[in-house]
Length: 334
Ligand SMILES: CC(C)(COP(=O)(O)OP(=O)(O)OC[C@H]1O[C@@H](n2cnc3c(N)ncnc32)[C@H](O)[C@@H]1OP(=O)(O)O)[C@@H](O)C(=O)NCCC(=O)NCCS
Image (cartoon, rainbow, N blue to C red; front, top):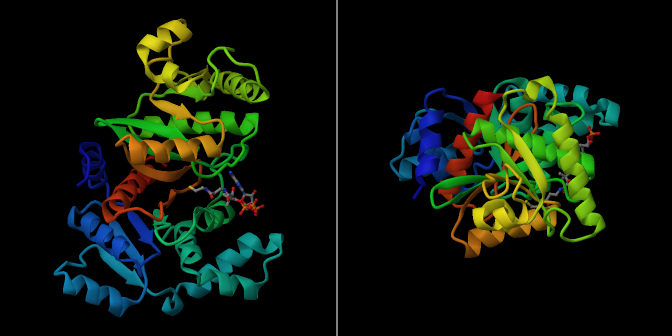
């Protein structure tokens, strides 16, 4: 069953239909998710896969294919155009035309090229592929929306119907201070897109210097960089507040916040949690999902020129439907 929050996102997506490509048409969970989204008329979908098999699967279940197009990359009249597009984008990196032809027919690359060519607004993949396999084509082809800012990922975590945004739990393994600052700023912007208050806590095992370590210094310096960036005109009236370093209890619990960081506008009220590295972020979100009863949507990419989103390989059909709807919303705010 979808949460109240996700149903709200699906309803929003249906107000402005976007086209999302799903390259994993061989996967039943993806087909079920496509049915959920098409049935709610929340997006137009392009499924990559074998046309007869996908039609049979929908017919067998008595589902309509209205709003869904099935494309077989090998037979697509667009393959030559996408091969050329890929070649032109990657030839300076040493890709030959022959390599481009072999690569463009790979379903994840084909879907990514569809987005680059403007034939789809976004892509959702990763039910059967690793994060790196989904993310690499996006980084190579779609690229960062801001030249000097790294791409990262976010999750929407729902706890008792309250959404929180976690970042980065999926892409940048060991961020530098600058990358950590980038992650905080992009996550704050993503939070605004999703109606989450942009109160951003830079997490650590220390609050306001309670522990001494190079790791703590890194988070503190990243916080200072992000706060400096917030002085730019584009952030005037954005409502974004970034503070740290702080522990998770100080970030989330008003009583602890009062003791550990009484002067902070973020502590005790944080809705966006920035983890110091991928180990902390990835382990943290999975613990909350498995032991803490939180729903987790993502990791989804942020900071790209167009939304490409990764799925956890353990995702259920409902989770995939949620990520498709979230991708539609990202495409709307692009
Ligand atoms: C995302 C990831 C795959 C990229 O690593 P990679 O394949 O080694 O990529 P490369 O370093 O070869 O970079 C490929 C391109 O992406 C760019 N890139 C890499 N990371 C980037 C980032 N965070 N933001 C923007 N661009 C990035 C590179 O500049 C390069 O561009 P170019 O080829 O046009 O010059 C890697 O960071 C990774 O494996 N992250 C962890 C993923 C994971 O396992 N997560 C846990 C499960 S959720």
